[in-house]
Image (cartoon, rainbow, N blue to C red; front, top):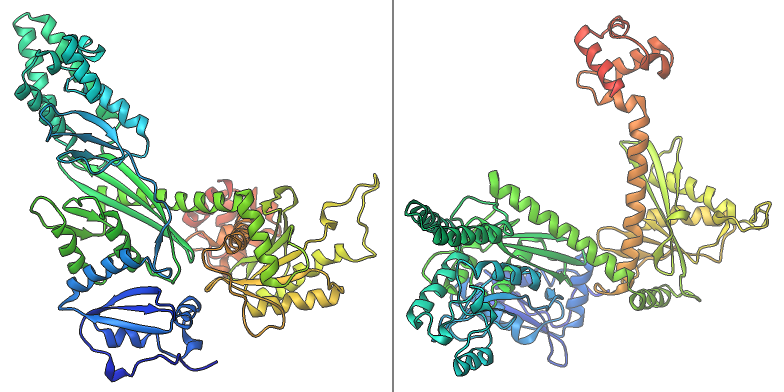
Amino acid sequence: MADTVSYRPKAGEIPTEPGVYRFSDDRGRVLYVGKANNLRQRLSNYFQPLRSLHERTRRMVLTASKVEWTVVGNEFEALQLEYTWIKEFDPPFNVKFRDDKSYPYLAITLADDVPRVLVTRNRKIPGARYFGPYTKAWAIRDTVDSLLKPFPMRSCSDATYKRAQQTGRPCLLGDIGKCAAPCVGRVGLSDHKAIALDFASFMSGQDQRFRARIEKAMKAASAELDFESAARYRDQLFAMDNALERSAVVLSEGIDADVFGIAHDELAAAVQQFIVRGGRIRGVRSWVVDKELDVELPELVETVLQNAYDDEEPPRQVIVPALPEDTPELERYLSGIRSTPGRVSLRTAQRGEKAALAQTVSQNAANALMLYKTRRSGDFVARSQALADIQEALGMEEAPLRIECFDVSHLSGTNIVASMVVFEDGLPRKDQYRRFAIAESADDTESLRQVLSRRLAYLREDAGVTTEEGQRKKFAYRPNLLIVDGGQPQVAAAKEAFDAAGITDIALVGIAKRLEELWLPDSDFPVILPRNSDALFLVQRVRDEAHRFAIAYQRQKRRKDIGSVLSDIPGLGPSRVKELLGHFGSVRRLKTATEEEIAAVRGIGPTLARTVYEKLRS
C-alpha cells in the first residue's frame, strides 16, 4: 500500500489561515466538507501514511481524487461557509440526518387582520408566531382546545369564517364560548387581536402573569356577588391549569433553554432536543444522524446545532453534552440568526436542576438509539438484504440464516463466563441462548478456545443429535456463521478450536470493536462493511446481544460468589476474606454465624463483624 495518495498537495502550497476544504472524486462530486482554523495543520492529518488513518477516513481519501480549499477571514466565516457548502453539495462522508419528518407546531397568525390559532407543519406562514415543535399533533390540539376558554380567539378556517360573516351566525365554538366571534361583531378586531397577543404571551411562558390576573378578577367578582362572572373566571383558571399540567415544570420559572442529548456509537447517533420555555417543556424533537466518518462528540454537537437551527430560532441558552472547539464562533453564529437581540450561550450542565434535565434528555437519546437500531435490524426487507450482503462480503456459499455469536466476560480475571446467542433469519432466538462458566483460564483467547471446544463437540458426526423421542436437540443445530467478539487473536483461537473439532463447513469471523472490522481466519486484512449498511447493523446487534448476555451472567455469578461479596465490604481485604473462610470452613457456616462468632476471627473487630453480618443477610 502506498504511503499516501497521489494528489497530496505540497505542504508549502497549503495556507495556514482559517478556511474550508472539500474533497472531490474524479467526477467532480464533493465527498467531504470540513473547516479548519489552520488549513495546513488540518489537511496534513488526511495525508499521513494510509495505514495509520482510520479505516473510514482512509476510504474517503482513497475515493477522492483532489482536495480544494477556500481561505476566509476568521473562524466564524469558516463556520458559515462550511454549513453553506454542506447544504449545497450534500457530501456522502459528512454527517447525515436520516429523520426528515416535519414536526407539528402551534401557530398564531398575528399578521392577519383576524388572527387565527392552528396546528400546522408549515413553517412559512407570513407573520405567524410559532410554538413547538411537538412530537404528537393530537397533544397540541388538546392544549389548544383547553386554552380557547381563557383565550377565546379564532381557530376556524377562512371558509368557515367567511360563511359566518355572510350568514350572521357564528359557528359552534362561538356558541360554547371558545371563540369571541369577531365574525359576527361580538368583539371588535382590535379586541380580538389583543386576545391573540395574550394567547401568544401565555405560550411564550408568561403563564403565571395571566393566571394571577384571572385569579384576581375571580376574587373581585366573587366579592361583588357576581357569581356568574366568578364561575367563568374559575373555568378559565381550570382550563389554564389543565393546559399547564401537560407541560412538566423542569427548570426555574422564566428560564428559556434548549437542552440537547446525544447518544452515539460508531455508526449512528440519536439526538433529543427538549424545548423549555418559562421553565416548562413546550416541545420535544428527536432525529437520527448517520455517521460516515468517526466524528467525536464535540464535533457532532456542532453539526447537530447547525441543523437544529436551520429554520428555527435558538433561545439565549443552549445546553449541550459537550462543547465544540470553536464554541465562541458557534455562539456568534447562533446569535446572528435570532430575530430579537440577545447573545446565545452554549454550556454544559454540571449540577442542579439543569444537570438533572440534561441526564433525562441523554437517557431519552440512548433509548431512541437502541430503538432505531432494533427497528432497523427487525425490518424483514432490511434483514434479508443484510443476510445477502454478509454472504457476499464473507464469500459464503449460502446466506447465514443461523448465526451464533460468542463473548467472554470476567472481572479482573475472576468469575470468568461466556455467552452464546443465536439469531435465525436475522432475529434473536432467546430460547437457544447458552451461557458457560469457565473454571480457570490464562486469558480471553484461552477462554474462547475452551468454550468453542465445548460447543463444537455437539456438532461432531458421532455426537448424538436427537433425543430419545427422536427430536433434534437444539444444541445440535449447525450455524451457518459463527461470530466471536474480537479481532485477529480471538479469531485465531477460535480457528484452533475449529481445527481440533474437524469443523470445516461453518464460516468463522470476528468483529473488532474499535473500527467495527470483520476478521476472517488467516487473513492479513479485514473485511469492511459499508458504514450505513444493514449488514453491519445486524452484525453489531448480534455482537451487542452476546456482550449483554455475558455481562448479565457474570454479574449473576458475582452476586452468588461469597468471595466477591465479602471483597466489596470496606476494610475487608483479601487476607481477611481468606481468614474468614478458613476459620468457618464453609460458606454455609459463615452465613449462619452470629456477629459475636464473626468478631472472634483474627483481624475482625465488632464494627467490621456487624458490617459483614448485615451484608451476608442482605
